[in-house]
Length: 480
Ligand code: GLY
Ligand code: MN
Ligand code: MN
Image (cartoon, rainbow, N blue to C red; front, side, top):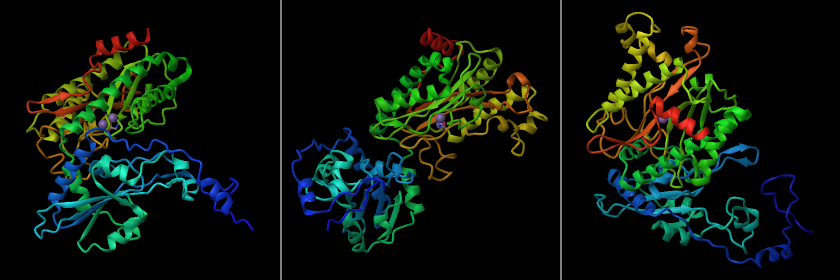
C-alpha cells in the first residue's frame, strides 16, 4: 500500500506519494541552478569588524545571536522574512533560521578573541526527499539555494549546519549570552532568554556607524529621496480617486523595485489624517485642499533604512493656516539643526525644537497659562500637539540602538559617525476642541536623516525641498 507524506503547506493539497517509484522519479532529471551566494561588497568585512568589537566586550563568554524565522501571518501563511538586525550587523547575512555562535578563544585572558561559526539551515537538493517536501529548506519550494560552502566563502566565516547546533552547544562550558530572535534550535539547548547585557552592548556598539554603514545609509536615503518625488508625481492619480492608498503603494513599489523594500510601514496621511502619527492605515481620500504627509524609508538590500518625512500641499499651494503651522515647524527644525554638532548632547536638539514649538503655540494663544507654566516640567502643555520626540538614531533599525542606556543615548555627546533623524512636528487633531477651527486637522512633520561629522553635520536627505516656495515648486513641477 502506498503511504502518503504529510502535506507541507495546505491541508487541501493532494498528498505526495512516498513510494520508492515516486521518490526515485523526483530524485533525478534536474539541472544545476545558479547557486551563487550574493553578498553586497564590503558586507562580510564590515561584519567581521563588528564581531571583533563585540568580542572585545565579552572576552570569556560564548555569544549566540539568532536571525529568527518568519512570523505567522495567518494559518499556514507567513509574513516575508527579515532577519534580526543584531544578527545582520554581525554576519552581513540575511538567512532565515540561522544562528551565529562566537566562542571565546583558548587564551585564558580572552586575548585571542572569539571563533565565529555561522549555523545555517542546510538546503535540500534533488535526491533528498526534503527537496520537494520541506517548504523551508527544499530547493523546489524556495528556489536556488546556495550551499553551506558557498556561504562560507561569500561571508568569510566558518559555516555549519543548524542541525548540529544543539549538540555543539552542549559541548560548550563557558557562560552563554544570547541576543537576536528566538530560535527553536536554541530552545532545544535550553537557551531561551536573551541577555539584556549582550543586547545593550550591541546597541551601544551600533551607535557610531563605520564608513561602510554610512555608505549603506546614503544609498537608502538617496533611494528614499527618489521615492518621494515618485509619490508627488502621482498626486493627480490620488486626487482622481486613488487616495492615500495610491500614494502609499507608489512609495512601497518604488522601495521594492530598487531595494529590499520599506524600512517600516509607510505612513501616508492626507488632510486630517496627517495629524495622526502612525497613520499607516492610509485608506483615506486625497483632496485639493489637503496637506499631504509622507513618512517613509527605503531599506536597501543590506537592511539599512532611511526615515524621511515631508508634507506638501496637494494643490501645489499652502493655505494660509497650513503655511503658518509649516513655518513654525521649519523654525523648530532650524533651531534643532543649529545645535547639532559633535560634542553637543542628543537631548540638546530635541529641547531646542520643543522650545520653539512651545513659544510659537503660546504666542498663538493655544497653551493654557503663562509661558513659564507651559514650559515647566509639570506643564509641557505644548506636548499635547507634539507628542513624539524630535529624533532618534537610525541604522539597520529605524529606531536604532533602542536598547542602549539613557546615558549613552539622550545624555551622551554626539560624535562623528552617528546617524540620526531630526523630525520636529505639530499635530493638530481634527477633533481637538482646544484649537481654533482653522487649525484643526493640520499635521506637519519635517524629518531629515543627518550624519554627524567632525565639523557639524551633513544632511543626507538635503536633496528634498523644505522651504515653502521650494515645496510648492516641487509639487507644481511634478504634477503639471
Ligand atoms: N517613521 C518613524 C519615525 O519617524 O520615527
Ligand atoms: Mn523618525
Ligand atoms: Mn519617520
